Length: 197
Ligand code: G4P
Image (cartoon, rainbow, N blue to C red; front, side):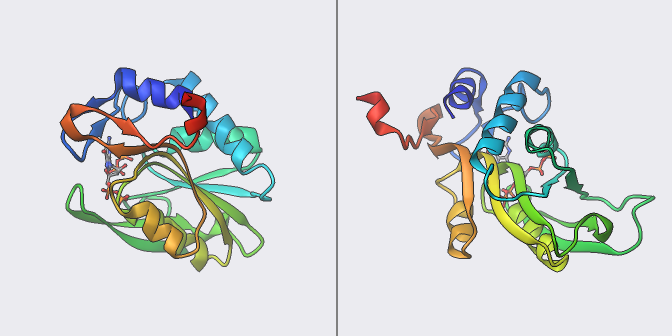
């Protein structure tokens, strides 16, 4: 998605060979107009997949997921990383280990909002090692619903998450695919090479 790549190039900060800081439009301050375009693009990609629900994870997945839900006209559920005071019964849970943060969270969703007839689009802001996405897949599968695909805003293609998910037969659609963060520069995998010619 060209608009997103331009935004990353203009406003993203490369913190190291592995970490891209995008808190001016995605992870802290949020650019609503960009989120709207991101939601529209996810809706276009998954328009014919019979999506009935979107599942994401707090906190940074929520903004793009809500915009996709707006365009697909379906509800959006976000997995919680901490136990909620009111969300106590019949939880679907999965354990998610973050290699980036070196911590493990038990994520949870109430089974009230997912059932066998649902066809779910999973959305997240970043795809690195794929642990969060895998946790969400496990939760959806526990409910008996099916996973139509995984929509990612920024995929770090030099890490193994996308391949891990694809090897499990899951469809992964990433709006920006970062090939490298070496030398303080963001390089994208550009599938439309002919556009450059
Ligand atoms: P994984 O789920 O793909 O295995 O990713 P990982 O454990 O490495 O990521 C843990 C957290 O760090 C996630 O956010 C993820 O979005 C974020 N993250 C991973 N790589 C980057 C990066 O290069 N840049 C930025 N900005 N974030 C990255 P989180 O802890 O769930 O945070 P939030 O959603 O509450 O903001």
